Amino acid sequence: MMNWLRTIAYQIVFYTGSVFIVLGVALFAPFGERAVIHHAHRWARLQRWTARHILGITTRLEGTIPEGQYLFAAKHQAMYETTELQLILGGPAMVLKRELARIPMWGWATRLYGSMAVDREASAKALRQLMAEGAAMRARGRSVIVYPEGTRVPPGETPPLRSGFAGLYKALSLPVVPIALDSGRLLPKKGAKRPGVVTIRIGEVIPPGLPRREAEQRVWEAINALELEGRVGQAAG
Picture 1: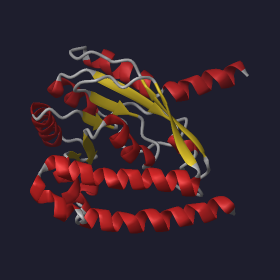
Picture 2: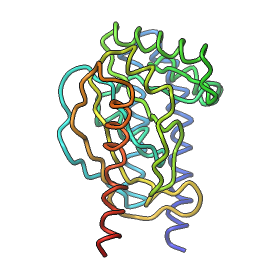
Picture 3: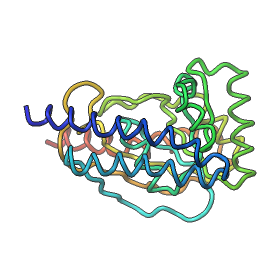
């Protein structure tokens, strides 16, 4: 019962505050991308504050974030990491589902922030557009974050990477920083959220220019490191 009460209070505070922050983007849009990013991070800090003080959820960061321009490839289990990683990584441009980019006002705000929308079907045309937009982001000096599984997955699941990752990896020709996490344990898609610590693990940098299968395999293993370790532990037990 207490977890449900926390969850309801979190939703009221976070989503009410979100409305005002998203509407406020219009005030910062005339001042350029950096101003929009700075304002948008207020939303990420709101998420962090409500998670910590209402849900009792904090983050433990393992590993070191390298300096420079990268393609970040992260596991995706909850909405939590989509804002938390923006703060931790310094505001990379993001790849998101096209249906999210169509949300009134919010979609417009994400485009100002720096986003690339991709269709779930990953048609050849959509992938070409994603690669072109990614190359433009690189030319502007932006790092990019992608969730290469394409959607959030329940804890323990390790689906293959979507084809869009390989195209983006080739188009950007940037080193990849894989990121593993376990947010789904505490923030399930359905049901009450639970207090605890979310682990975010920064993996070893993967160089650009690798053959597609090798790059995908290394990224897959790295973003699923916590899941794979859990299976080993269960087998040993």
